[in-house]
Length: 117
Image (cartoon, rainbow, N blue to C red; front, side, top):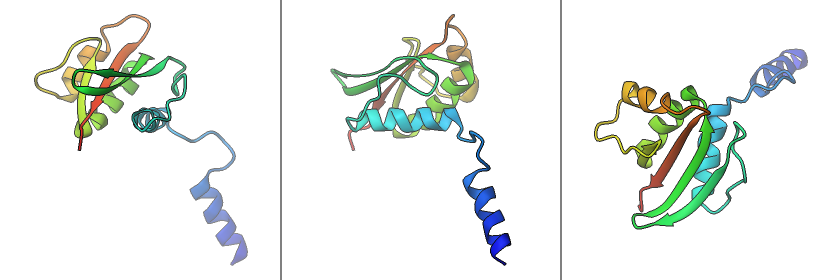
């Protein structure tokens, strides 16, 4: 019984290998940055910056792979506005995000303006 509990914990907590999804880590880092806890770089090694704009707080991640940009953009759009490589999409879809995120050489730039709820 103890062995079964240990096995279950090993499977749930991980088996010692890096199992965290860097895309999920990026989303968490951008949310933390909006709360005032911005690390100098994000999960993919690019810069992560917070600034104030006319519409409020803006969190910008640079140097993102296309997949991570799409994943983070889609999730963060539920709680604010996303701008990809300087473009504010009028209609957001996964296909539109993939198109915008894939346009920049050296990685995409994703800016998130959190809702002021």
